[in-house]
Amino acid sequence: MDPYRNPFAPGAGSRPPELAGRDYVLEAARIACGRAVAGRSARSMMLLGLRGTGKTVLLNEIGKIAAAEGLLVSKVESPESESLARLLYPEMRKVMRALSTVEAAKQIASRGLKGLRGFAACFKIEVAGVEVGVEPEPGLADSGDLQYDLPDLFREIGKGAQAAGRGWILLIDEVQYLSEADLSALIVSIHQMSQEGLPVLLVGAGLPQVAKLAGEAKSYAERLFIYPEVSALDPDSAARAVEKPIIEEESSIGEAALQTIVDRTRGYPFFLQEWASFSWNNADGPAITADDVERSYAETLASLDAGFFRVRIDRLTRAEVQFVKAMSDLGDGPYAMADIARSMSRSQSSLGPTRANIIAKGMIYSTDHGYLDFTVPLFAEFIRRQDGD
Image (cartoon, rainbow, N blue to C red; front, side, top):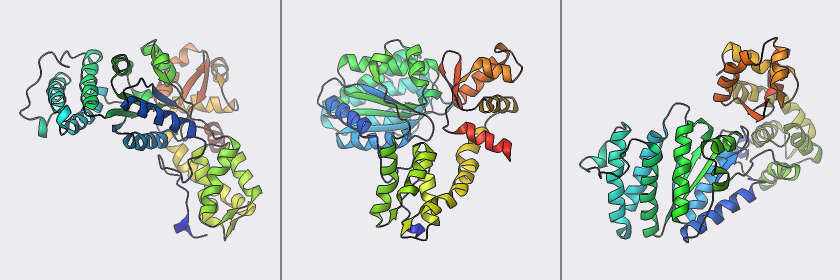
């Protein structure tokens, strides 16, 4: 079939042609945005899920919804080594500059820009361009403690947005990479905006441990956010994600072919897109058959192994690779830490630093006390395939 008409999008963060099974998340975001602009209480949210489940896609969709509802939108991705202050500074500057063009919010935004100047000085953030000549506002966001300074700046943005009849939504991807202090400051800021009724929302996305990390940072985080689980699609949604784009291209897929893709990918969105894409390219058309799907399986696995899986295991040290291989040798997770240690002929305490490092790299997470699992779906199968080569 014509590769130029291939509707599937297996790239990282690429929006699939049919965003199936996520309506409940998008509707919750739409309601929250509408309520915030209307001056009513609205809860922020944290999207939780494994790699490849579409959290980044949902963040982007929520950004579009928020813009349509009248909110100013900022989106950042948290790297492993960047501070929250440096991450948010340019976004807060953009928002304040945008608000400064609205007459009703000009005075508030001007004060906010002055506070931002002091904030930049305290956190040693290089300032260039429009802030040159702007004097700091003494006492505003200049304590050097993010837990006090960030709420000050959020408040100025919230007041300015309220005066302009707008709102502000901050989208943060990879929340698990924020330090505990940074996550705590972020939660404090959103909590204060909620208490003061200001139209500021946060939608974060991260691995499943984010809920626990947020709770450890601030105990009230569990009440401040809703935590939608972004997991594998149910069979009907998975089938729709594959079949509908094909039909829209005036082609078709056989029932057996469709069922094979849904079953073997276990409904994980990235894998669905990958296999469906190869099946399309390998089909003579106009219908994708069960034979086309089977012939595409090896190519799909090779692509996933060389890209989606390989880039993750390549980040691990030799000791860390041995640890995750021991996990995979035990079958599919979750895995008891005691079983991992036993299979490696090591004590649990001696494996503690290795375990902590792999968690910090976002490869595994604690599902319960004493239990671990991979953050990447079907990763254990990948490792076992490498051992079999």
